[in-house]
Length: 250
Ligand code: PGA
Image 1 (cartoon, rainbow, N blue to C red):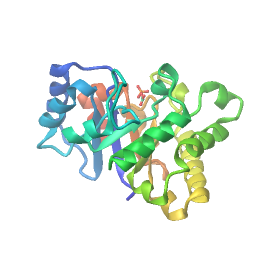
Image 2: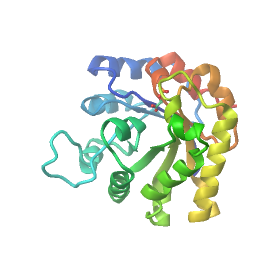
Image 3: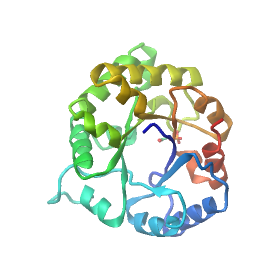
Image 4: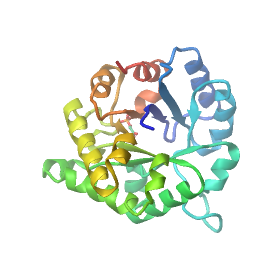
């Protein structure tokens, strides 16, 4: 079902103590009850984060996983390892995974299939680079990212998918897509999914915006009809800022 979601992607930040402290600080703040709140600490801190968040509505999610069941993949983490510790949602396809770690659409298709098969919910990230936006190719790039990684999924898989549109030029740069640009792309994404699958799947899927969302711009971005929330990087590392973003829905 289409839900309001605000997720914090902590990336490679926060050691054990900082992880526990940030969640403790969030506990002390009022978080809107109609918004699903998620935080994604690093792998080594997932168990501690799950313990600290246990009595709260905050869902602890993972930042990545490998597509294989198990085996000789040094440094990697499998879907079963995540579910075994109590993780229910995994971020896949973040632009930093794509650009620094060579994750292609084909790899992401495998990862997504594996996560779905293992019962995980996938927060699938995608978005164009600055050059694509400047050349007017952004719709085409986004359509291909979705098509290449997600369109081979069965219709039933869509109940386990959250989309996160993150224009690469807006991630960590302080540059945000305008609320109109976000709405325009989110509407395009819904239309693309409706054409490939069905109108009801397109209407049910939550589409988050990510890229320099801050307390100051969240209200406007979240007010758009096709924006169902945000994937937050930098501002998710400060409890009061993250809470303000969670509470930004009208
Ligand atoms: P940012 O990161 O909010 O720091 O731009 C967003 C993200 O990478 O998901």
